[in-house]
Image 1: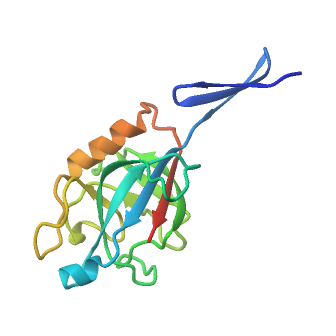
Image 2 (image 1 turned 90 degrees about the vertical axis):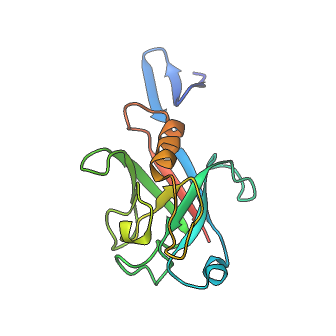
Length: 174
C-alpha cells in the first residue's frame, strides 16, 4: 500500500490507509546565537546578549532563519544552578501558562537544573538562569534589556498554536 504525507499548516499527517491517520505537530524550532565578546565589550561579566531566531531544525547552522528578538542571559559559569546560563546544545521544550509569569517556554534536558524558562524579564535580577527575551540591547551599566513583553508576544505569535501543544526545540550556539 502506498503511503502519502500531506502538510497542512502546523500539522503533518501520514496516511497509510483511509481508516488510519497519524498526526504530529511540527516542532517550533528556535535558535539562540550568543554574541561573542559581549563581556569584554561591556567591561563586565554580568550578562550575555544573544539573538533568537525562528528557524527550521533541518537548516544548516549558517542559515539562522528569521530573527525574532534579542535574549539576555547570565554568563556561563559551569552550569551552576541559579547563577549560570545553560550550556550550548539542543533542548526540547514546552509551553507553560500557569502562575504569575503567563505564557512562557520551559526547557527540558537541562541536567540537574530544573524550570529553565524563556520568560518576561528585563535585568539579571529577573532571572535565576533563565532566558529573558527583549526587543533592545543592554541600555546601561546594569545590563538591562527593553521590550520583554513585546518580545514574548512576538515569539508567541510565531509559535501560532492556540492549544499550546506544539513541541519546542531550542538550539543554543555559543
